[in-house]
Image 1: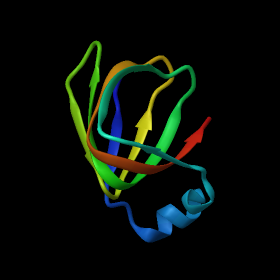
Image 2 (image 1 turned 180 degrees about the vertical axis):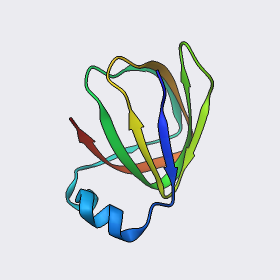
Image 3 (image 1 turned 90 degrees about the horizontal axis):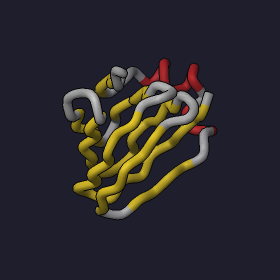
Image 4 (image 1 turned 60 degrees about the vertical axis):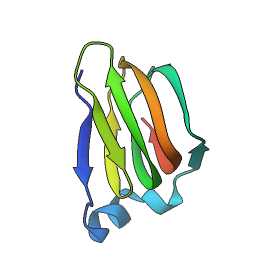
Length: 90
């Protein structure tokens, strides 16, 4: 399963998606397993994380990244700088 990352999307796209109206999730430096039972789209406001799918290559995420985590993805989150992100579940 592929994690889709768009670095620094244009403001027009952010507004069109309504990202600033989405809830905010924060998490301190930590490491934990995670499984997505629905597709999640998120937009990083702060922090850095390395997401390693159980069946794929690690992806480094940071400020201004727009990310889609597909339903069914099983991975490990390693937060290296406190994260703050908008999120939306489909």
